[in-house]
Amino acid sequence: MRDNPQHSSDELIRSHLPLARRLAMRYRYTSEPIEDLVQVASMGLVLAAKRFDPMRGASFPSFAVPTIVGELRRHIRDHGWSARVPRSVQENILRIAAASDDLSARLGRSPTPRELSDESGLDVTAVLEARLATHAYEAGSLDSTYDSDDERSEPVLAVGVEEPGYDRVERAVILWPAVRELPDEERAVIAMRFLGDLTQSQIAERIGVSQMQVSRLLRRALNRIQAATGPAA
Image (cartoon, rainbow, N blue to C red; front, side, top):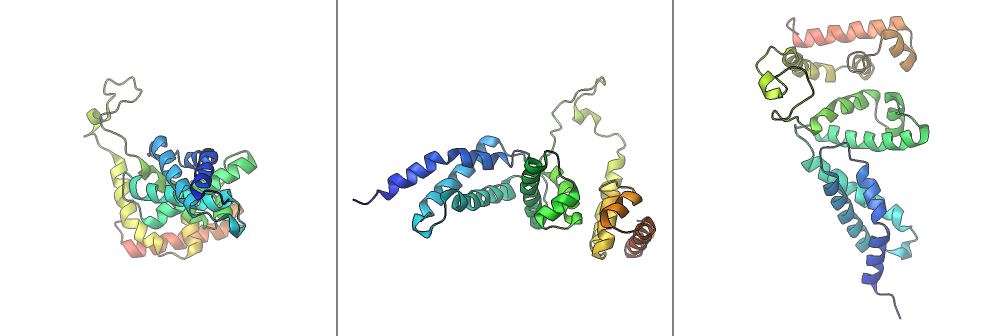
């Protein structure tokens, strides 16, 4: 008698629900409720169980993981952002998150941007850009409160004061197109200096050049940016 395919599929789903939950937990840093992520991962598990053919020789976990992760990434890409972020950056964030989990488990510490770059196959600039963009996952509510001795403990009551951050955002919007057009090496140095907050000597050590070469790269990059944006930048 042949096995009932429905019975086999149900067994696979029941026995691999912990795997789906573990994969969902990879994305707990997003604003999506963990219950929703587990549900999406479980749906991916169901899809994988329905498509799995044991005659092809692959183990079920190795077959199911890409399907589950794909469903999670698609859900987060479509629902998990408070501010609009380019799709390529969204994909990089998810890619780096997976690489960070794997590296943290192997190294026993948080990985550096260079290690994440090597693990994910992305350049250091893309890693730094993705880390910066993770702040777009969740917007703080103006009705929330925060710990403070100031009687204005609700952010909405503090709105209206002079905020230099707006000027920084405006400058970033103006500067980013010019930065994007820089040669890869200059763009990476700019990112490490101004996003990674590294000193010139730290940058030199990281990319394997002298500090004087880093200084030249920074000067050349800044001159290009100024030429592209005008004196006001």
